[in-house]
Image (cartoon, rainbow, N blue to C red; front, top):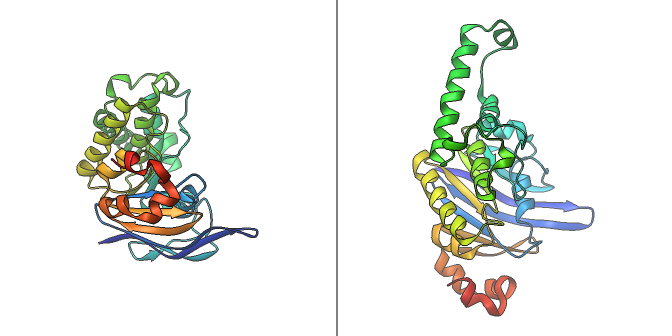
Length: 259
């Protein structure tokens, strides 16, 4: 099933075309990477897919429905979740509360239910607590559930951000440089965790990442952007050997970076 598709997607900022004529797709259960040098437009693409930016060209379809121009909140309700290159947790809140807050997007109790503590409110509160703790267990964070988020290690905070995204019950998960700032051990653990999330939740994942070892090991397909233009698309082996990718992104260090 086609989960996401863009057709001729582009955006202008004044006279600058940051992204142009981008065609990409993700099918159900795929893990696809979007790579390219700094300034290539990768995060701009994520911002269009999640409603932060409104495209000036083309269209975005999610399960066949046009969604370009919708608000971030509306897209979250439809089933698109993301993490950010710069961690955006509620640092003063507990690990558990960071995840519980994200569940609010899918609650059905009313304001009156909350004020009067009616049975529906209680049922949903218990459900959110149970699901939050289950997500923390999946991410290896249950032991620190009561810790303030600011006290976690960098790698743990990255995992918490993914847990919070999963709490919105997404059908599509966008990961923006999840391995940024991690050491090799943390990156390896992250790679295993992403695979576990994909299998456990049947998740479709679009990944931006500069760590080529991670990209080549877990991606089924790879899109490569350069200055907002798609210059390559294919499986890891195809991209590994593509002369345009080597020239634009990897230069003389290509063989080592893609090994």
